[in-house]
Length: 230
Ligand SMILES: [Zn+2]
Image (cartoon, rainbow, N blue to C red; front, side):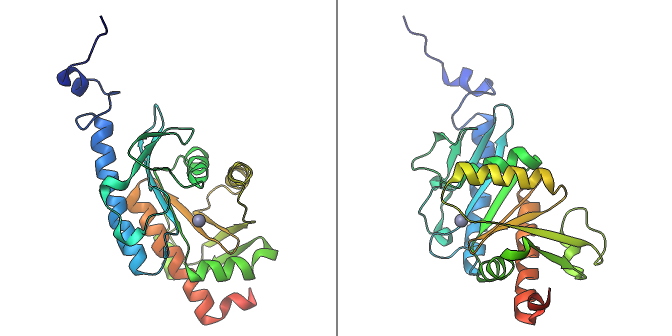
């Protein structure tokens, strides 16, 4: 006869799925956080028209991420709309499918051991990643707000924000992301050309702060005209 697990056994098994498992709790917490981030970022105009995607690591062994489902308005996300995916971007919890860009989230989580990855499509990142594509990136230097980036202690810090050529081939782009992270240790984010920003953090709070800092600095560069002379 086929064995069936009782609810109590499921609750005691850390690898078990379901609302009582540690993964289930972490998934619910991450989904609630990410839904709140979606509302805030949408209100700021950073994730309009279903653009952008957000993820958080809820387990390392095996690797599991809570991630936005594709095609949803980020301003009205509900925690129940999030997905749990494994290390190959297969959905293991929730309805829907992750964005094709889920492979980039996985490349970042593996490349820099990030606990959360946030991706926005702001006007500022779109403008700058187009105007500076030939230089391969943008240098952010001399701004007090740089101190909001993890590990940065002075406005004299020079932050290099690489610009990667955009592509719809996510396997190729994922490899490009991994290569960039290997070759530029210490960066806090990168841009996809005329597409948007990817940044991350050890946790969701840090990743959210990095979006706010980098979006602020990109807006300053465009509004002040400083970007044209760099
Ligand atoms: Zn995107």
